[in-house]
Image (cartoon, rainbow, N blue to C red; front, side):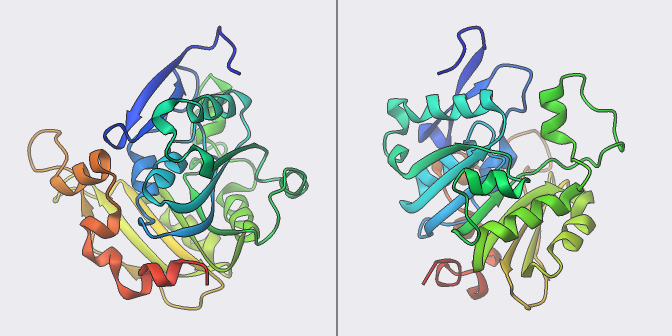
Length: 276
């Protein structure tokens, strides 16, 4: 149970299909990145999915609400965020998927801690990941330690996160990760020898603006080459309103394959990302 002194908000996602309980302050609060990350996997995905560093569970909940054959395990090390996720699962608005979601409090980057929590090697078909993205010492960390830990990597950098993902995912299983666009070189390095057949989707605020995020999906053990896909545009040229495709993801629970045809290339069809 949450400490009554710990202030939270209840936030609706996917047009009310998901209700998340999030800290009002002091911790990272999920939003657009989490919803787009969840949309990387479509409605027909099945099997076990691990949401790595799940926070309050927004990405994992959003996938579970869409993909009815998926069992999602949220893994988070901060006990306050774990409590938020568990409280949200008890809300009536999440009843349609609550029995297909588990919440685990564990440090994903520590192999022994993963095993102690029952997160065994090769035990997941898919993984979602929105990891910290600043290298230690590259930015001035937030004075709030929880927010700093959400955004600043440990000494092992991104490599630690991709190593953990490779340990958890079965051979030919898939990983989807979202990060700032300037971290793409580090992502490619961390995937080398672990995940291949990468599909890189740049996310542009507007058509004439540089990408600010990249969504990367790969297959464990694949030797296929990387593909840089046409970018996804979030907004029109004027104003802050999202374009119709993004509205379908944010409010209607659509997946990327539903609104961005290149993402549904046969290599990434559901037969290719589902367990046999």
